[in-house]
Length: 75
Image 1: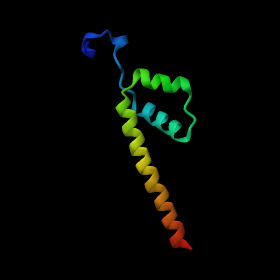
Image 2: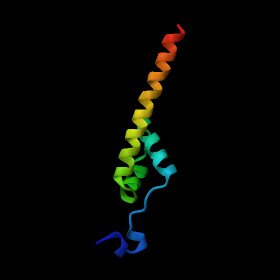
Image 3: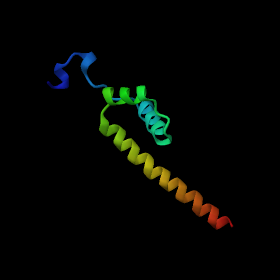
Image 4: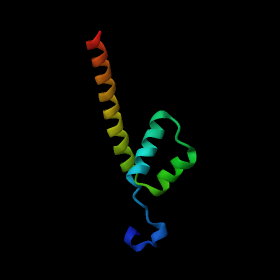
């Protein structure tokens, strides 16, 4: 059944930017609660969280690389 035919309370809601950011950061450092994880998978689109995780990983690698290069050039 398409989402448009479902009652409002049964449709999958797109998570807010803040919710995705919170879940991504909590998952990245390993403090995501089981309750929040289940809520994310029940109410959100998995691809939004996957894309968010990939973007976070790329930005994290870039930040670490930059910090290491700055530390090496300063010494």
